[in-house]
Image (cartoon, rainbow, N blue to C red; front, top):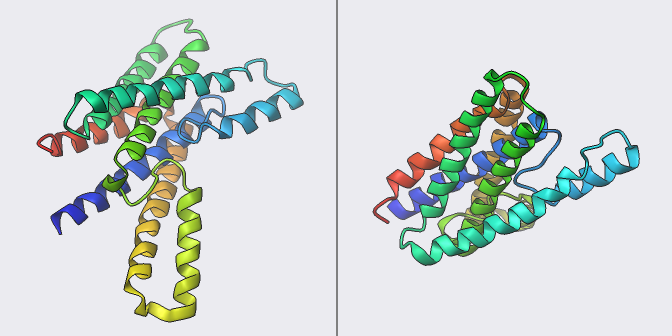
Length: 221
């Protein structure tokens, strides 16, 4: 039962953080997706066709950064017995990114590249979380950074529940698990939108701290 509780709150935390970071960078860092990096293809193509953004090419930079992060996550996993070490590094990177945002904000004549640099470090952090999800799939109820697969499974489960009622315990449990991922991500998106609009990238300190606490709780794992 304790293990199930751990999976529940780890899943909720990770989905909220992914939704939060994805939306914060989109709102406060020139429409860059940090968790759903494939979404940057769409933004890049739109900005190129529209011809209104000379920095559209930056969106493509998210892909090598993301790939490097996933590779790094794999290396961390090989060297550490604690699965949550990857998440610890993610938390540190997010917290440092938030602090850097505030520091650069207080400096005069800060270049626009600082915003992109912080966005890329956030992409790197989300790449680590993606690596965690692939390497340790049983630690969560499903993917925590992309919701399409979770929504698909929830829809299939809902269809079966509507057909057979609540008597299928396994399907009902699966549906509840998918709801955790979807609701968590949506909540994170909403909080990230508010934080990004009114407080900027400095609020990355919040998910970073939460991730470090998560690691500290599981440090004996």
